[in-house]
Structures are given as C-alpha cells and as structure tokens.
Length: 319
Image 1 (cartoon, rainbow, N blue to C red):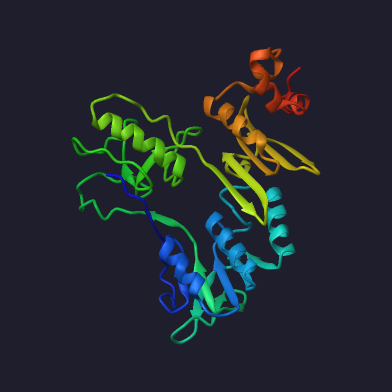
Image 2: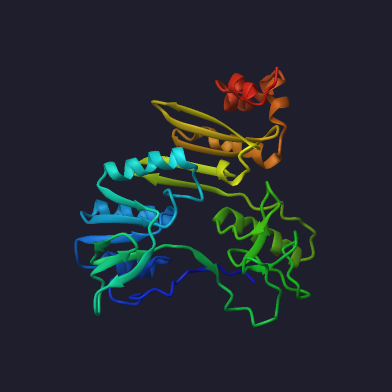
C-alpha cells in the first residue's frame, strides 16, 4: 500500500463556495490561478500556506494570513525565528493574524470574506491549508490496523498487521527518529525511504526503517528558512538548552537536550543544516565531538561547528 494524503476539510460554514480552495494538487493550484478578484485570505501558515500567500502577493493581490496558533510555521520554528519570518511577510505587504479561529466563509454562492473570532476579512478567494489526513481509500474497514494518529500501523520493516502487506508514504504512522514517538511524518524524504524499505522487504529482503525525521525548507520572499528535528517548545523547559546566533547572514538556532543536538533552525544562510542533520540522525554525543581534536578527515564536521564550539561547551557546562 503506497498512498499519500488528502487535505483536512473542516466542518466550516461556507466551505464549497466558488473561490474556496483546499490546496493540495495541481488542479487546486490551477483553480486558484484562475480565480478572479484582488483580495485573498489564506488560512494556515504551514509551508504550503506561506508559499500560496507569497504567490498571490506577487500577482498583486492583497493577502491576509490567518493562523490559529501563536506563530507562523508553528511546527517548524520556535517563537524567535517565527517572529522574524512573520516580520518578513509583513514587510512585503502580507497581513498576518495569529491566534484567530476561522468561524465562517461569508458570501452566498462565492467567497466574499472570512469571519474569525476577532474580525471579518474581505476575500474574493479563500485558500485553506490547515492540515493533511492519511489517504486510506485503498484500505477496507478493519483490513489493517490503524495507529492512534489515524495512519496505517507498520513495524520497522514497514509491514502492516495483515500478512503479506507492506505500506509506505503519507498513509502510514511511523516512529520519530529522535524521540521514538509514533505519529504522522508527511514529508517526501521520509516517504521515499519508506518506499525503498517496503519494496525491498516485500521482495524478500530484511531491511529496517530507521525512523522519520522532520526536515523542511521554505523560501520566504527569497530568504531561505530551514528546520530539522525537534523544536525547543516541544521539550520540557528545564531539559532544553538553546544556542541562538544572529548576524548579517541570518540566524542559527540549535536545540540541545542532555549532551545531544536534537534540532536546528536557520534563516538566511542554511549551509550548516545538512551537516548538523547528520549529527542529529546519528545521535552523537555533542560534548565528545566538541572536545575531540578534529582531524583532517573530520574537516567538514569541524566546519559545521566552527565558531560555536565554545558557546556550545559553555551551554552544556563542559570544561
């Protein structure tokens, strides 16, 4: 079973009117491009919502972003970096409204506005990007076991509860590589590796899926933002330590727990993220890596941590 995901469609008054799109595929994008008008409201500030808002703004539309939570890209960035991205959106003419719940899409037959619990926004087009759900249309009721998140339950070989059936992609529930928590990790790189593991095992091999990793990049008006791993806000406050660096090149945010690096966020120059992702995935003891004298063979690793060694050691209380 290899299926993707479908948009979460809310039980929202006005959903289904002309000019209202739950953005997921090329057809949805074509409908949005063909929309007539000059004012749009995008509900949801995940990567797709951000990209839709930017595309509409570049076409000359007035755009408002509405988010239920307290920051943009809330699953990818902690508050300081999210605030910087919000400012960048606003500096380019996009209005951002946080902590607001959408109550209704107004208009008789086509969208005329969006009513939240705080205001009413004019809108000729409304774009809903508020989450995805596993696509389970290929699965009959009780045919395979589902996990608590609603995805198909699989083991480390991507095998389902039904003999001779493997599953992969956005439809499955998998384990987080860092925390071991089970959930939905609907990202392309996870689905691609799952497909390889499932296919190999279905053909008689014995391969294990190491776990899913959150890795996402998004361009916000030509500034790159990247996030990998766990947010500081997802860790108990007394357990998380953060190194936050700012400069003309952008921002770097490193999240530590115990002696391990568990998350990285970056704005502007994101070259370090790939190498730091390797450290996260391997679960390396960061203090040992910092105290060890780098060899020529470890040049790239030395570059990854260059300029932050002393601050990281101080943060971990190492001598």
